[in-house]
Image (cartoon, rainbow, N blue to C red):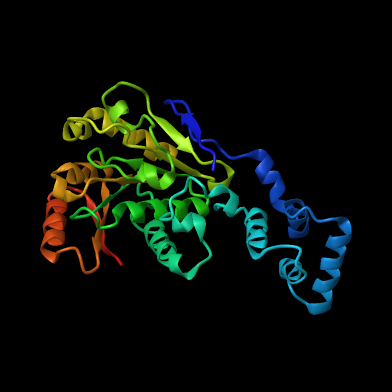
Length: 302
């Protein structure tokens, strides 16, 4: 994976897309496999004959003849149908937890697609021209909210929603490890006015996905999250992106999660199976309902 730093100002939005990538979408799978697997014209013709003879897809024919691996065919199909994910060669810096990027065709990730559908036609749908950001909250440390938000973000980006993840956990941030972005300036520097915000783009392998890390842990996280700068940041992002997902500290850390959720306008409440206490979840939900925040959940992380 390669990361590119992108700086957005008031007059700039996220990149509209790579024209060369769009131009390649109409290529047949045989042409893509020929390039990926370095097949000769003779081998391509042999695969095509085998395909016709056995009435199977071209990719399956290439696998049976030993000219391609199944992961090569999956990669070629992802290029043909403009479905971004990480090929084996690009996974080095991506954490194993990012299953939507590493194994998007496995049955284990269907829960993220279901959640994506629920949110796309619900809370994240624009009402009266105004779209909410979504804070992902949890009662306790270790409930899995960062795992959920990271994979949900990839799921939205694979549907060609322009998606940005903001790590607003200014106490014990972890999303930068999952996305493989270490030692970067981030939200804390932006809110303390030490720098304008910069978004990390993940390139062709994870198109439409952007990330704003938390940055250095500040001594005054609650005060920074209460600041007008955070409101302005969320306003700008919700104008420029289809989906804005915001990671938060566990409620056990204090009031930060409630502050973030109220500013976002919507919250997904994550609890951990056989770990989270019902009392803690109910307390957090009750606190969120004191404001104008809309609540989704609870989502049980197994």
